[in-house]
Length: 206
Image (cartoon, rainbow, N blue to C red):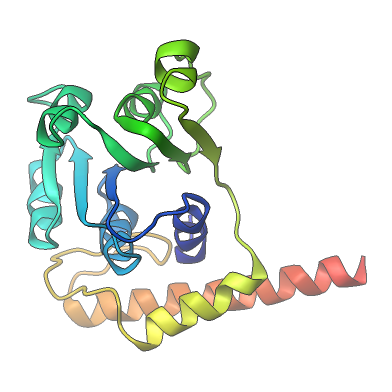
């Protein structure tokens, strides 16, 4: 998944200022998602993962860590939100279990965006988890050309802080220092712009 896909996923969530977000999967993109959700106006962001080091990094970016090895993420998120749940859940892993947890963590009228790629079916309780809460499950697998100015502007303003990361990884690969992490951000953004431009040209010609 490229950075522009991540921006697209958050835009599809219709995240509004003052809402709460849960990010399932705190790898390189998950850490970026935390910062982007904050930039989009999220009041609180919960970071769900099994890795202590990743959760510590998420906490450094002002997210509330939820360790799936120690607690049930759905119950923990509901407890931390006083029973409400989150307005937006972003799933970046692609496993049925984390997809179910993303849906289960939603507040009434909440939106779960499934961006993690997997090949296993998702099973949910349609009444209690969807109809009863009037919740939504939204798939996100691509991006729109008109979203590129947002990605480029975020890059220009350096919305993503990579200074706390010992390793930044994602679309551009592994980087072992701060300069490399920033370079990965620039490469990812440039690749995103080039890819979208070529893709749109092929559509126009076709």
